[in-house]
Image (cartoon, rainbow, N blue to C red; front, side):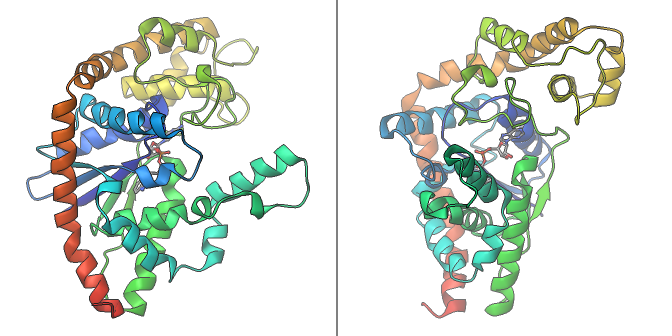
Length: 340
Ligand code: TYM
């Protein structure tokens, strides 16, 4: 019996990286699930506060994300779809975990290290300055571990960038099990076949919701025209012919990755077809594939956005189910640590 848990931050409209790296896999897992599997998909509002958010925007993005999750095919009858911030146990368990997690483990998180690197570049200082970063950014993987373990999840489908956080969740579960009582199964990371989807403008970094350059990412809500324009403007190199070289030819490799993900082929097979073709041909075909992939989710998203009562109902039921489901774990934890 599998208990699948995953989450996504409501920091903006989901992009192609979220879709190919994670969301598409959630829908597949839902399709393949057997009757006694449990699937939980969470919109992780608390996590989004680690970076400054405009409250008005956040509240819209939070609702829109629920619409987007339903639009791509998640079904509230088969999966528990809910807002993390509507189940109070997440932050409670997170506190318990932060009291057993060594600081050194969090310092090793690459997400934290890259934050430090960014702030260092901005200031042009050689000394790393932690005082500029908030505590939430540092402890966010602990909250993530709580999200997962609260439901005793066995499988966590996420993109490659989150793998280290799942390993940390295993570590924290293991520490708790040893220190108190065997309570948590150790969750497994489920990889998607898709690699990291990279920024269209700077393929040395991942496609991200937080990049200020809108042309660097394709949104689930982009029109056909916008999609084509962004892909035409994607950064590639000037070498003739196409090869899949994710070290030296990042831009082309990213387009091949996207195309292979859309058509569910092996990326090397796809690359072979373009050996003698140019970047223009590749871009045209990538645009066609992405337009086709996102067409249905986009129309469904626009429709659902007009159904606010229905969305509120789904959120309410999801929160009730998630809270009821996790109450038992929290009770066990309280008993184990002596706070009952
Ligand atoms: P978030 O909101 O950044 O991303 C949601 C999912 O999308 C994947 N992803 C990508 N995959 C491929 N290429 C990209 N460019 C790309 N960008 C994002 C992410 O791997 C993720 O699966 N900390 C998490 C949210 C979270 C969570 C959890 C996940 C909180 N609690 C518990 C799983 C279990 C995050 O910030 O994801």
